[in-house]
Image (cartoon, rainbow, N blue to C red):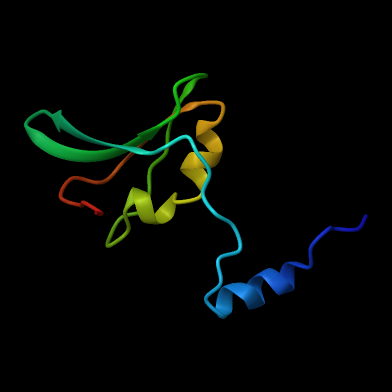
Length: 91
């Protein structure tokens, strides 16, 4: 099986600061949720299909950082919700 693109060329392009893939629509919405008195930032996208909640790792990570490419791809066929852990907010 031949792949249409050499994966190493993508890595090389990334290392030179060029964008290889752009995020696609649908747009990502920012929600501010109140969960038992705690404010939680949540990214949401998509308006059809089954809902999916995706959780990022802890520490300095945030949903927008971990799932920048994943949310738009999944949102084509699903409703996606990606909350940040309480106290985290990525602008």
